[in-house]
Length: 463
Image (cartoon, rainbow, N blue to C red; front, side, top):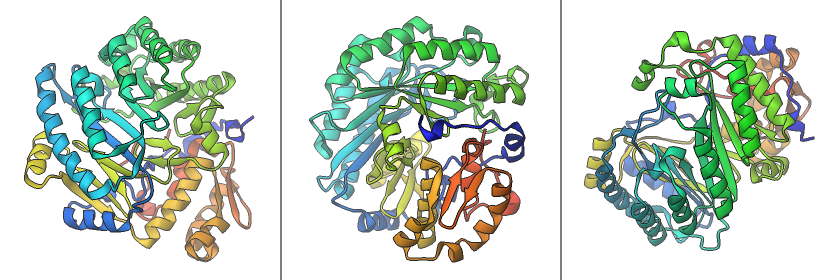
């Protein structure tokens, strides 16, 4: 058995350590991005610090949705007017050309992801045009060896669209399912029969998509342990290659659509924990590997193999096997990670369009990594991807004494060791089966940006 599947459910520890904290898709996290930094300086630093011989990862944000899902916290534009897509795509192509001039250098694109919103909101012809523009501007692979993925709402795709997606180069799909119980679907305004989901999933398999992911959410209104169990049983029968099981964070003050969800309809914390515990045990029993932080994969999936070989990585797209790629992102609100720089585009559609028209880019805020940021990012990445930390590797990579550099942190970690979340030896920090569910909290011990007296503010809960 994969060692990461050894999960110990300790309710006392969970209640004690289940604060709020970052998801560490980056370090520093996005709240450290500074709007006062100039776009020119960020781009210059990115270009100077990027490895022009390393491969690229591309992300394209398509924000449109025909219907609002009440739980959603993504950057989106709700409209049934399909004519709104082309002006946005035209602006995107303008930005794309500038990004290619800055970063392409004929670097091979090993990873491509279309997210949203609902990327399949755009027509087949527009999708073909989008991929053509990407190929004209960047060195996309033609042999189907790259990881080219797209997020799909099963209600917004048919067999013909799936066929087009496969023909133009996509080989991975991620289906947003969330829950199969009709009462839950109605409460979040996302009604989709299981037959519809099974149909597009099976057709994707027939067309040769090599990886199929399904997203689920626990903590939605009217969910019970029994109802989510039933959802899991059906999903396991559908046998996706990967599963993402996310915790719903109810923040109606930040996300207007969540005001449609009544707080009294949400499962209480004890039920949510029971759902999570059952989810983990059922998926492991069904043969999935617990990758960590909401993610599961079959043992022969590339994510599971990368974790076993110590090559798993994490970026704004979640867990990935492409640790050597710079991430070049385009579209409204998208976040790039290039060399020593992270930066994010304008969130507002009109601001994004105006910025691209004026400057050929829409950079709103960013951060340049310091030497300390690089060190701590390496530590956090090891922990969150592999549940262990080889201190000797950090010492050799950054020419430092781990015990001296992290003296304060190691002292703070003693309570984690006493409580059984970790095991500390001379040069290794090993996360225990009881600590794996609380990996975000363990990573926070190395986060220099979180004042100890304010641990967890501005973030979602860990569990």
